[in-house]
Image (tube, rainbow, N blue to C red; front, side, top):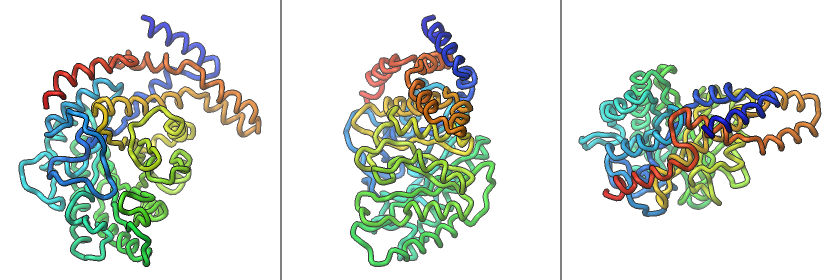
Length: 415
């Protein structure tokens, strides 16, 4: 009862500045965040037990990580019960559910049939990623841009197979599957020739992405990075390379919150990128000093990302995925915290008097613009969020934490 009462008071306050809270909640219900499967098992996957490489590192040894596809799906099911709305799952190639001994280029839709069945039962969509790291064919530090033709061919075939799997996901679930291509290629020390690897990557990508697939079911996206562990001096798929390739080839560009210099924010890049690409993929994480992929918190940058998407109507052209992996805390809780925070940030953006603020800005009334934006920060957004959670039959506020603790005692601690 108190939640509903608080919401009614908040509804009246927001109405006073021209904000319809019911419309904001209706908009939020349409948002599907793509949860990243790799938070549940520290990016190990099920195809092999190779150590991580390619600038990726997971820290911590909290008990209870998923060891099988069934355990990972059970953990995801529990997390989704704590998160309002219907969302998506983002799979990496190494999460194939199969008893076959299969190499990456030979992966096929049948190796992911159980994931499709699971997603269909829950009314969810799937997204996908080729796994171009933690493999002997990536040990040189190069994959699709390698100077070795055999190495390039291996990864080209893996990317081709990944696109077929993506289209299969889309057709089976009747929702577009976004397939993100990220390559760890680069040099630890300063290279002599910066152009040749990028030329090889461009040419190889053209081969890998040559087949036309149905855009209703599949979308290619290319991700950039400024550096990684072991490739501190030069990354082949830099911001300029990836953005130029995506814009010129008509595919999506992927902005990862941790893949830029610490003084850069992807929230400021969203509006620029979408002037030149039809669609955008976000990998939302929280970098701390470097691309450390901490659990997403409701910080200024997350709110700025949501504002950039909502204020000018760019959300409909953007696919939101999460990308962090923390093994120092309960992994299921990490999913819940990050996803709920992403949704909170979007709700706060939906609760802005956008038309009025745009009018003030166009008229040059920057005093009123600043005053209203600052006063909004103390409006009772949390009452609207609590009401949304209750109406979607998920725990309100921190009540979910007790459920996680019980799940840890009953399930995770026994693995």
